[in-house]
Every structure is written in structure tokens, then in C-alpha cells.
Length: 315
Image (tube, rainbow, N blue to C red; front, side, top):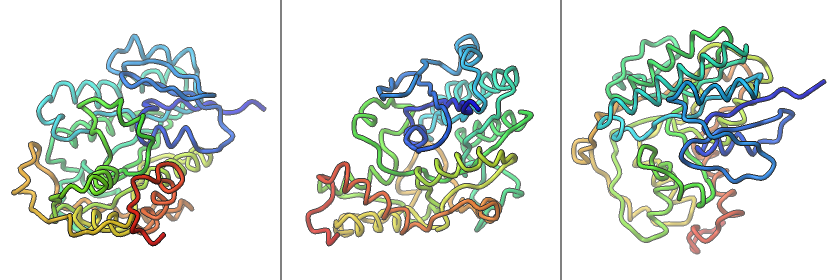
């Protein structure tokens, strides 16, 4: 029996990178747009998902499963450039969906906790989305489009973080944040720089490795529908930063607190988008507490990039 073929849209993203490095029984191919991918054993396609004619390359691959990790994720950039955000997050999803339906591929779409307003303590899948910024609005619309696929799986993570090789980070563009939040904190601490981090924005941070593993397992089970797929711990950005500092051996005295109002971010932020993951857990997926997730990231950094761990670390 031939292996199932998975096409990962956006292989140069953090999640895309993790999906490419999971051992599995699938034949995996990937796409990129501006950030080229140089990985052995992987066939790559250059596709601008905002152009339907380029997306037609997907028809030649004929994947059994398409995993869409591509998105414009810089929230403030989306707020400034609404049309660009719509092109990538909405029109791009629409173009990929057309190809998936022509081939009969399963369509796995990665959404976000930003589809919620942040005015509740916790959010379940059944709660009504009500985004407060352009990023959230475009991602909610992309969910609506993805849900039209005859075989769809929509996952909502929250603040995806994890280690990725430095050479991948250097290729980023301004529409995507240069580093995920945890790596940004770690690199600031490594450089001895002081950080001012908000204490009033709560989420359930998601380790990219854990999310990638769950995606593969859900594909194997041919699961469908919409699921929250974040971490288990509801935590604010300040406490998340301090946990990173402590695990990696740095003093959390370099980290000071501020409010969202003081930070003056361009796009409004929801204050509390903590996702409840009972639905996915009942299906046998493993969801991590924040301490477990940071420990996994620490072990990867220790093996791959130990110079950014503080020498004072007791590990």
C-alpha cells in the first residue's frame, strides 16, 4: 500500500518546521513563498497562496491531506495593512480550499485564539467568536471558508512557541514576527537586555512540537470538525516570560511588568483568550502544562543551541 501524501502549506513557519521533522509513515511535501526552505529529503514548491494560478501546482502533487499553516501572523502589521492581511489569510485559504476540493484532499486549517474577544475567562469550541482586531477577523473568515471543505479539520492554538534553528529565523519578513514569543524572551535575556512585558494579556501557550504531533495523530484518526489545540495552562505574558527565565537559568529581575495600555500596541488585543481543550483530550490527544512545554523546549535548546542557556542554569 502506498503512503498517504501530506502537503504542508508554509513549511518555513515554526509549525511547518516541526511538522517536517516528525517521524511518521506519510510522504511529506511542503511549500514556501518568500522564505525558501533548504532541507534534505523534502520536495518543496514555491507557491504564493494569494494567487490561484500558483496554487494550481497543488493539483500536480495530488496530496491526500493539505495542512495550511500559512498566515500573516504579525497582529500589528495586519492592522496597518488590512488588504494584505485579507489576501493572505482569507483569499489564500480560499485558493487552497479550491484545490483541496478538486483533488478530494482532507483540509487541515490552523486558526487561532484571536477569533475570540477575550471578555470571558475560558473559551470552548461552541463559544461565539467575536474578534477585536483585523488579524482575528481575517482568521475567523478563513475558518468559515475552511469549514466548507467536505473533509475539514480546524485547529485553534494559542501563542505558538518553541525552538527553531537560527537560520530559519533570519529569513523572516515583516508580516511575520521575527521570533515566536518564547524565543524572543530567551534571546533578550541572553543579550542581557531588560524586557517590559504585559501582565494583563492571558492565553494558553502552545508548544509547536506538541501541536505538530497532535496534527499528525488527528490525521491518522481522520478526525473532522473544529478543536481547540493549545496548552493547558492559562497564564499571562509576564508570568510566561518569568518561567522561561527561570528554566533557562536567567534572573527574572530583567523582566518588568506593564499594562497593554502602557505598551500602546497598534492593534487592540483581547485580554483573556484561554482555550479549553477537553474536546481534543477526550479524543486521546496529549495536551501539555506550561512547565512541561518549556522543559521540552529547554532540552532542545540544550542539544541544538546551548550557547543561549545561561551558565548559571542548574540543569
